[in-house]
Image (cartoon, rainbow, N blue to C red; front, side, top):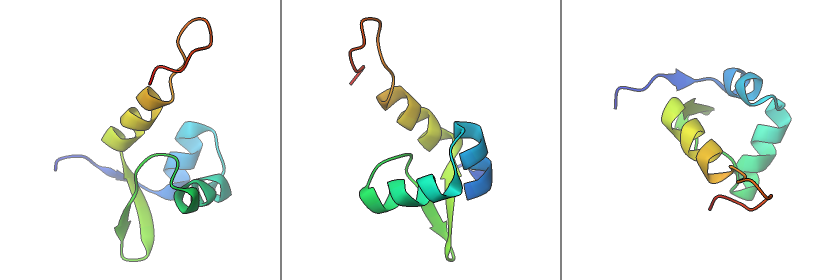
Length: 65
């Protein structure tokens, strides 16, 4: 695995969401996949790309998935 790990703050900033929202998403099983480093959640660029691709909306308002 050659991907850097983003902190929760970096991920929230990238997605334009709050850290609280990321925590809620994790508890609900939604959002990008996180890995634990100690007690801290971390996110890979790959998991963010997968999340965004799965959440994409096609023209006409249909989900891409």
